[in-house]
Amino acid sequence: MRDLRSDYNGTIALAFAAKAKSGSPFTSAAIDLNGFEGCMIVATAGALGTEVDTYTVSCTDGATNAAADTPVAGYLLGSAVHQYATTPVAIDTSSTVKLASYVGGKRWIKVILTVAGSGTGSGVVGIDVIRGHPKYSPVA
Image (cartoon, rainbow, N blue to C red; front, side, top):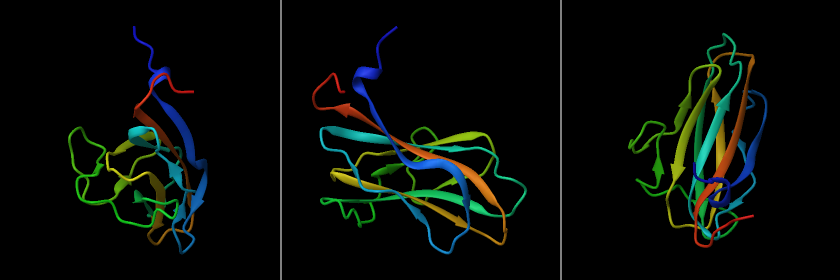
């Protein structure tokens, strides 16, 4: 077996909690990718309930911590292996994990969770960002 902990560093983008449709998306604080060459966005769904809402994950990037740019096509890889995401990654099933990778060259990203639809309930969702491919290893 090989040690993976020394090559990855994680942070909570959006804490695991009930997320209801609020009129505006849930946006993380800016996440600094300095010292890393990519990151994985890990969206975990608990109970989504029987409502007809949709939950989608996307991100913005930037050279500053405003991170307000839409990533260039090909910088966000989707939840299927080798799938380029041109649209946000959908969280469509309870008790699942969806993955997306950011491979762009910008230092900062923000993760965005959008809840839409005609439902009135909420779904339990959490999003973590795992920074990887460090320029210098091991990482703290």
